[in-house]
Length: 215
Image (tube, rainbow, N blue to C red; front, side):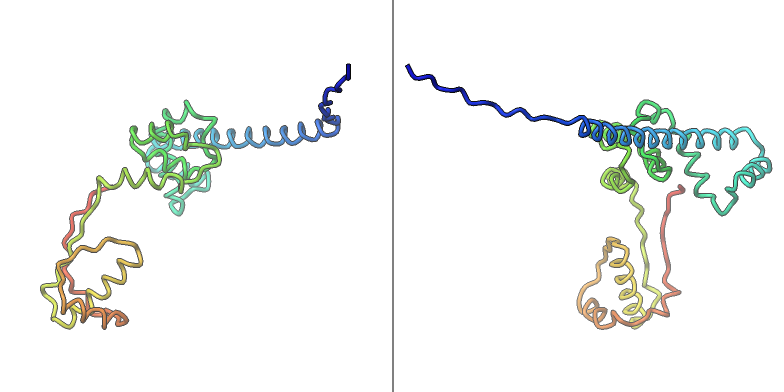
């Protein structure tokens, strides 16, 4: 009877140096993530301090506080963002290990309504390495309900100035990706295309009729 040798499975030997090398990398990764978490937590703490100072100090004392921490009126946006973060701190406490170390991104998160923020958590979008850009689609969904329409009346302008004004308006709308709705028909529209390169230096008399929401 012929004996058939069983195939030998090669044994991969992992050296102690390789194990130590991998462990060293993992330690640095762990340390880095810990620092990120501490930074996010520190931002929340800063926000709470600023908001508490704003709530308990008089206007003049709060100004003195701002001057003392190097956040005078030139950094008003920074202070406002921290206050908004503090006012929504409850939503951040439960996910402190996932927060990004950026007060700007945390501010954007604080501006979302509760339903949108809950959706973000469900979609696992919130992470230490996220940026405000990752929230674009969620912010757009929130903001579409509050679209502000601005109506420009050109009725008091001469026909020539209307051409210039509307051509300039079209240029601005294209530049800022603004949706332009009008009932302008040809040949007026064709005339405007020929004037696209002209400067509308006479559009000061355009009457702006708008109802803007107060932020």
